[in-house]
Image (cartoon, rainbow, N blue to C red; front, side, top):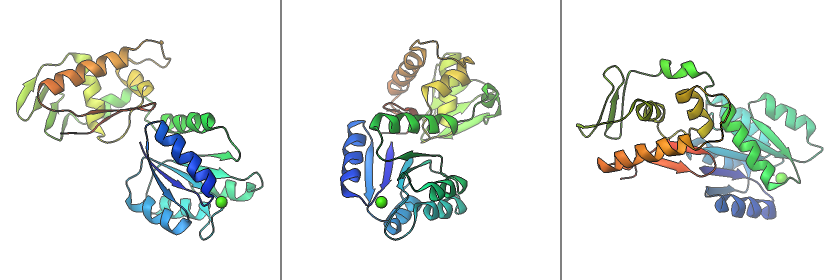
Length: 230
Ligand code: CA
């Protein structure tokens, strides 16, 4: 994922940077509110970690500004124990969760995961609401005829492979968790502790690569997204 960390304390910013890079993410650091706000508006980030107490603009104001401009990037606030009023303001203004310093890095990862899960459409019916005809990056999917083409060449997919592709293609560049795919394609609310999603994703990826396109990105620890690599 592409992460934005808005944090003025150099030591914590450095720790978050190292930890998140270690998890396979790309991290941009902003040391104050003004640069953070500007990056958050234009940087196309997947997630924002936002310190509440910043030298110029307060974190809850940043949240309020972003949400008022319809920037819906998930935000976890990082707050001091006595920031309670600002924390409440931040949640009211549209932040998704918060963590109180000091926190365990593993807890931050778990909370990010939970925020991403919550922000996904939950109902298995959601696949029925997806568009019938999808086209992106040279891949087209016509759900009515169950036909998939890559640069006008037909690719043969099984029903489940087609369903998985449809979810990814309907929202390209959004990350879809394994849990979400399991629910939408197989109608399973509980994780049966199998690797069925991984198996189907890897089959689908192989078929698409065989047709000359690499377009499924595995975002380690979070899920999959449709992103044309070449
Ligand atoms: Ca601070």
